[in-house]
Image (tube, rainbow, N blue to C red):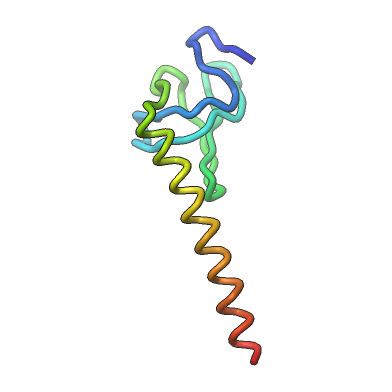
Length: 83
């Protein structure tokens, strides 16, 4: 779904209000709902959101990889405690 601002669902964006990179989940009037791979979700006015740069896209991908790696490590740590 395209928005008058040029933003689209699934697009990597930078939110100037929260100073964070995120993915657009959906629009609700003047608000855009955003999320990060860590599970953090929030809404912001779409006027404070801009399309993410290539660097910011790589940054979001790296955040997701690091988060998954840490979760995997937590599971391994819990298994070791059981022994």
